[in-house]
Image (cartoon, rainbow, N blue to C red; front, side, top):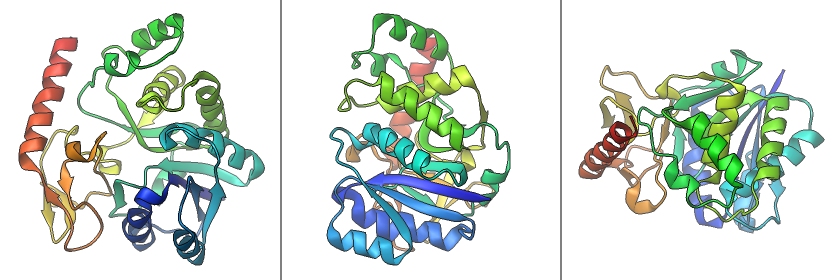
Length: 276
């Protein structure tokens, strides 16, 4: 059985991709049955060479628009051309590191998607206001997602056929690839309609939207009980909203922005309360 880990990147984040994301992946995850694919949205020649030297497959994209939106069209093309993969992990690579193996996730619940939900209910109205989706679909999305926890789409595992169907839905529905938040909105809608298994937050831990404390020792993230966190995601729409300064993989990395984390948790908690 063969698995695929797929991500998308451009020149802006290629240093993190190579020095943090890829290094953490190779150090901590068993890749004996797994291939790595990087959807190339403008990587430098040097970065391409380094990736290929590390046995990473590249697929060049000429689609314009935000990478988080355009990646679905490229991924579905690749999966149709490469039917040998049973399970797919699609994840971010500009703000995410691996600290423990996630290979076991490929072997459980193989017929459905496996995702991590955030502890707070982030209001979907923020995303809906900025879309050009038909009014009927907006109403349906709001009905389906109301009062539900948000799935974070920075780390998704699922069967190949399921990924193709989901990507086809997103590509056919998304008209403006430059709209921020469309991937989050449409994947949440699609998965809540079609079903998924919720994973422990250990597999996509976001300091600002997950309850419970954490600590950092010599650059490594731990839960309060001393357990090393498997996947850490320094999520934030802009650099100023990312909760960890100097985020990355290594002893000299990772300093928490305590005040920002505290304030964002208050904001998300208040937003969740007002939605009730």
